[in-house]
Length: 155
Image (cartoon, rainbow, N blue to C red; front, side, top):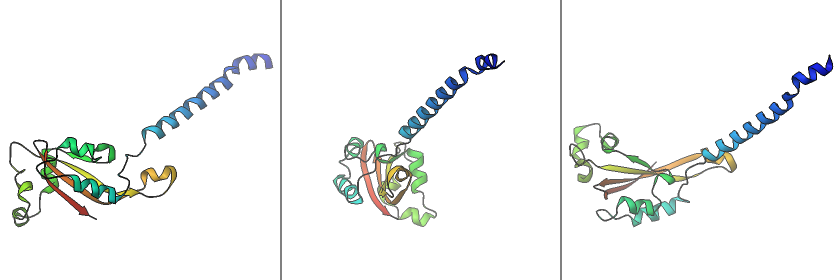
């Protein structure tokens, strides 16, 4: 009877080992895919990159070259998202908006924007990947691929 039971459960150790290998591979893949976006090494580096961006001269490619791109945590905003992002609460505040921002409202050639967080990861090791505390953000408004407005917002 024991020989029959052994034959019936013989693949069990092999299945357990295969399950363990699959779980380990899934953990490694999950850790690799959840790597944090690279953030500019310091707020000083971010400010240096910000200073190199010139209104009406710099392009989206220049922002990418300076590291102000999605690989560093930047968000790209579409034309409608730009309007939502900058929409003031009152008409009086709308009248005070920078002309470059105001020109994006109701225009067929809508603007896009790039919003880059300022700050640095906090903590050490694996948990530092998700312990990002933004200290503000840089906003670059683009029209036809050129920066028409830039601003640093401290938080």
